[in-house]
Image (cartoon, rainbow, N blue to C red; front, side, top):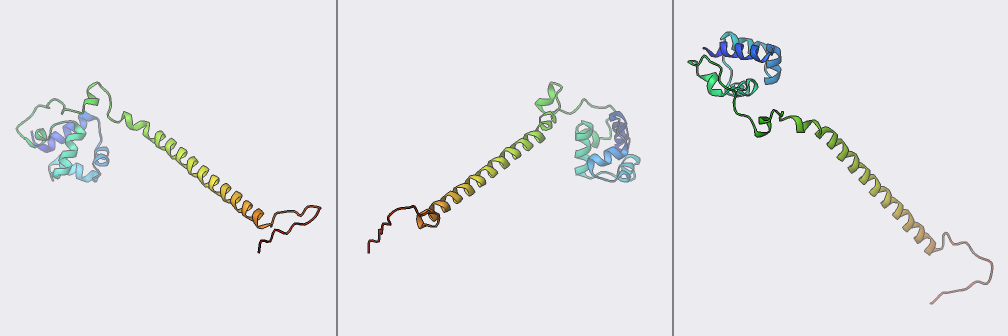
Length: 146
C-alpha cells in the first residue's frame, strides 16, 4: 500500500479530519490533502509526527510493501496501564498558580516588614536627635560634655 493511502486510512481510523491533522502537525490542511492524494510527500519531521499521531512505527509508513496495519507502537510505561501521559499535566496549572500566589505573598510580606523596620529605625533616630522629644516640666539638665 502506498504512503498516501496509508495516511488517509490511518486518519480515518483515528477519526480525525484533515483540518485536525493539520492543526496537530502545524501544517496547512492543503498539505495534508496533497499527502493523502499523492501529490506530495511529508517531510521527515512530519513523517515522525504522523507516526506518533497515529501510533504506528515510522517503518510502517515508509515501507510501501506492507498492507496490514501493525500493532501500535510501544509507548511509555505510564501508558501501559491505560493511563494517559498527560494526566500529570492537568494539575500542574493549579500547582503553578498556587506556588505563584504563595511566592507573591512572601515577597509582599518581606517588603512590608522591611518598610516597617525602616520606619521604626527612622523614628528611633529622630527620637535620639530630639525631634520627637517633648520637653517635660522641671529643671533642665545640660549634658554637654565639651
